[in-house]
Image 1: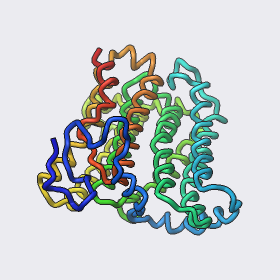
Image 2 (image 1 turned 45 degrees about the vertical axis):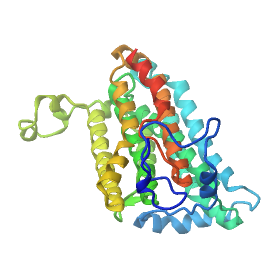
Image 3 (image 1 turned 30 degrees about the horizontal axis):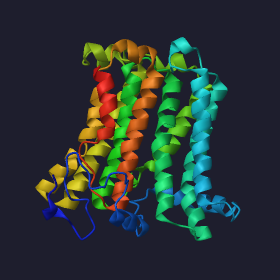
Image 4 (image 1 turned 180 degrees about the vertical axis):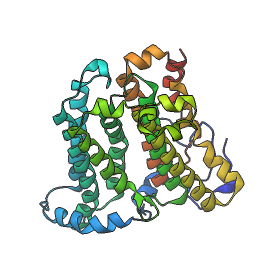
Length: 359
């Protein structure tokens, strides 16, 4: 059931609340008004960082080297293909991303790092190519952000490959943290109509992507197991460990890094929630907005219902299933944001996965 009292304007249904049933006819994916809203949509990026401004001229210069006949969506596709190449390579070499699969060759880790650089650089060039060729369109944004959704799986796989955290709940914690934060960025745009690109002048999407690429590439030149399996007890001074809980002393560096990533992205999610609250300035609308975080939260909770043996022996398959469903509901949020359509708090697409986890 919906409440039309909060509709912002005619045709804009983003502030209308519904728990389960969305306002589309059977057989349709988008309403007529939604199609018109997508056609007239204007992309509004958030704040850029100092690194963005520093590299912008380089991205523009690289774009000038592209032939004018090359479609912007093909630039996006080439970046996605780099992610696919690295993901397939890592899967072939380490199916479960754990020690039982054997050591991953240094060249494959280096390839993953270089593919990360290439993917994000092309991601920064496709929009410039669109403006250069006069082919900018809302569909280009859909295509671009749709690839970003699916390429999250590549980033997670590459990070898991450098410290072989597959076969444990730590790998899935790394994955759900990343995908939930990405979902929240699209959720924020749904309400504020501005896609967050950074928090402050120094931390943003560019720093994260190039930082991940640098981390992965650097790991091609070290003994990864010896580095990541060090315990905090062996790394920190005894004076510090004496004041820490017992579990912290036994925590491995790869686990500590995952917790650090969780804390960082949790802070970014908190700021997203704060910006949405400041944008809607209505308790009822804000509570409706928060309810749209229920579906990804249920997805995260469902993996903890899986038997430990499934996580240990089939990490990759759980990761792919979870990642694709996360990608689906995130892409739907992107489409509905541009279409200004009502997005249900409970997405029925998550139900089969949850039932499987419970079963």
